[in-house]
Image (tube, rainbow, N blue to C red; front, side, top):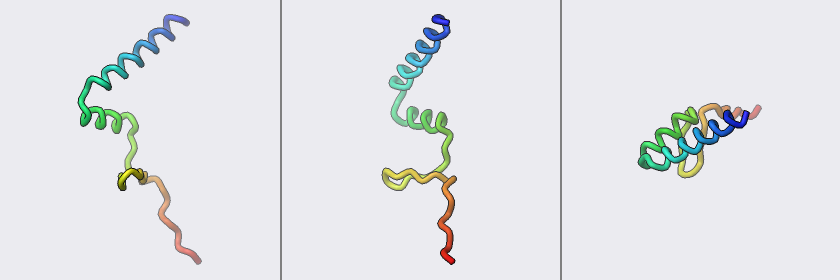
Length: 58
């Protein structure tokens, strides 16, 4: 069990180090691919496509 935990921690550390070593644009692309979210940014506000559209009042 300890070997599995150590392996997972090592893999996470290596992934974090690799993420720091790549450039800013590649890091942003990698982060977007890992998140897998579709949406748009309006300044610093993220609006996912999954939000419902506003309903019309009756």
